[in-house]
Image (tube, rainbow, N blue to C red; front, side, top):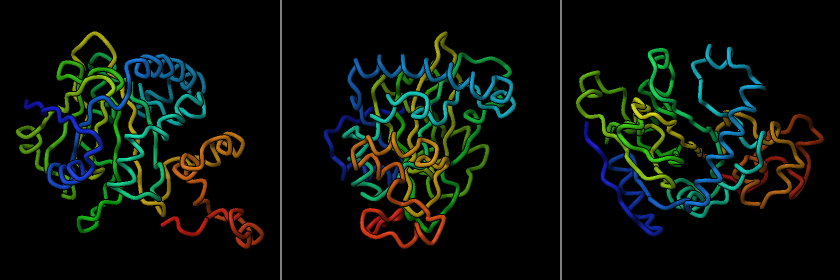
Length: 272
């Protein structure tokens, strides 16, 4: 299996955009400091326990979502900070759109491989945005390596150049899989139509990451973040984070809401 070389840049968004267009992905080491990595691991451990209590282990296993942490911001406001991360925000603004919104923020805790984990959806080849729009980039992933992504730990596998295309053949998947190795704190950007999956974790430790998917503002989010998080929590955030959470592109539920004016509008003007 091949391994992707690291590319170090300092906000070279032209290079990043070109790589995503040709290869489908781009790796940026150092998006998080070591202290931030340590704090993130601690917060993810806490949230995983909270989600298991809230959803129930049986339901998670039935859904093939052991180790998948959805709606982390609801259980710990720590995870709001990633919306304000300058590397993530810069990538979204310059490569996708300054009015893009967060489609999802999901944590991943990939455990050491066991036979029963073969059914986990992370291990299946897929596209996070399975719609081809004549080459139009409508969705961008910003995946944070919270622990080291190595071949041994099950680094994300991709098929370079497979973005904006139908599913490759099984032979192509087997022959062309590339492991996106990256040290903890790196940011992996990729076109959401890129064919990818989690590798097999042959290490003795969990492999941890946080996937952010951003889409054009007129697409529905995986979870209705404004409603799920509540107005008080969102209104305490910076305006840019509010916008990313879809707070400025809410759908009116009545004529009273529809005819609001100015900043009181749920779906504000100029949002793409």
